Image (cartoon, rainbow, N blue to C red; front, side, top):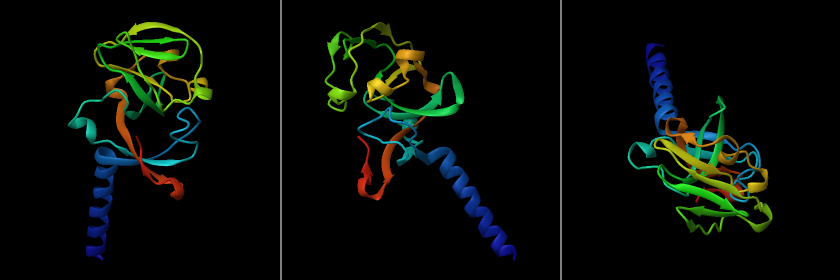
Length: 166
């Protein structure tokens, strides 16, 4: 009996540390990341990667929603600390240069313009790939780095779409 309790305790501890510090399964909710990610897809979030490398433009990150930190969001980083981010009639400009966003489909882009924003130190500017249907930094501002807890790296459900997330 003692061996069973010991083995079960070790397994539970291992899973706790794995989920807390290394990787976690995450269910996508909503359509803000279409066409990359669809509602109810299941992904793996790498919670370890940002301990060794910086958060980069283009990363798809999972973070605590700044207005309600009990809720998780998933978006794409388009501006890092020090960047100036601007949207002109739906086109993204970072530091005055237009960014080609092949991940945003024409029918998902809006034609709105947003004034240039300087991303402060310790913050990131995030946008959904489905701009017409995304609650993102255009609405509530930048995300504090401490709220970003992982990078979306792998889709495991549905099985027909299994693979790396780019």
